[in-house]
Image (cartoon, rainbow, N blue to C red; front, side):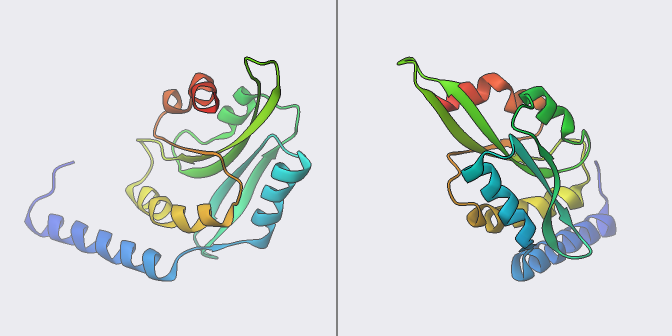
Length: 158
């Protein structure tokens, strides 16, 4: 995308204002988001939880949960192709010693084709939200599906 003169200045000023407003006020994490995460972590009630930012309320809310029997493909197809989201996924696997294990992944989904405003909003709010979720084992930042392929999770978990 090419910008000229005033357009570039306007774009830069807009990004600075957006960044400062998000950095200073931050997003609030809805109580329901915290309890839903705890249901995944402690009670294994969900395989995954997808969160979105409600820009009007300025809070992170639960968009969708996946039942314990849902697959990784069910999870990935639930993410929007053109908008950002946060997600947690409870990854079960068997070790080389034949032990059943579980690791929780935090995924910051920011597709390359999503709006710049959305990318900035999710990027500036991620750390605040992530700190609310205790017990995350690994974090993945993905801009396309190959960066969060099931093999990526397997490699990180082992």
